Image 1 (cartoon, rainbow, N blue to C red):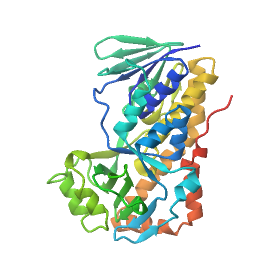
Image 2: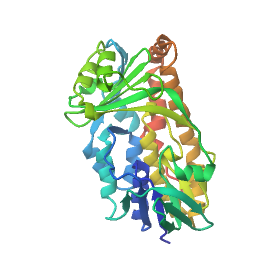
Image 3: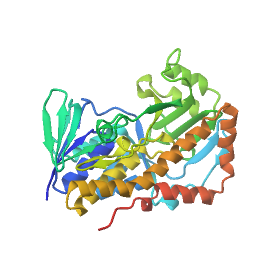
Length: 383
């Protein structure tokens, strides 16, 4: 029976959930406090997330919109290879290439699959009231929107998550991240990561003539670089092997953002009655596995399947939480562990640990990567 469902948050997970549920004839309204959904730089869509997008009918549109990575190499800052796999490693191990798209392009694809009026921007939810078989979402102007169910896809500072769990503490992880888009064509053989002592840089093609890149470095919380972020990175990475200095130089300052990274207490409760949380609201994770948005896409497809299989929202949401918890929490832990190792102090110790990762046999690395990001890693619940 079609249900009236409110999704709080028009990020990747929220929009994808709305698309999946609308396809099953549910009446879905997405509430988003922002007025502009085009923010962000790039995002890596691994094959597990492409499989989830295929499930909701948008996989091919995303593949067309992005650049592709087929190998994924790792180097040291001086250009020495730490890991140089075969050219088709990702395709062989994971089922197809990794796709990299602009976040705004992914948002446009997801939003374009919804009917006009399905997303209300500038709508800030301030309270959620959960009943036995209905919910009420109060907006900042005092209006109350009622529905049969609510999905909290409202990010790390989720109102719905705190409604289910009480306050959830956030703590600075000790390092910050920069993300940028460079007007630079990346040699496909260099797609992957480059490490230095206490610094990590990732770089992947974004179409034929742009590159999406990120960098992390240990620095005090809330800091800003004297002379600007662009100047700081040009100076910090100046002696690194190509293409790192070129990427920074080819990035316009307006195409560079800086965000401190935080861990947040993992919520004990993902659902209660006709309320559930997904994406970063349920399982925020550090960026080192590239699975934050990908797991949000998995959430969306799996939640829609749970709704289709259950007699009511409460049953569907409880089954979703039980089904997803083990896989996602393992990824949260692993991503945090990688971040701690790369950012060990003193920096030389973190650098030594990064170099030592090259000693792990390729078959072991590939097998583990497949368990995380292969098409086969995306599994739908069965009846």
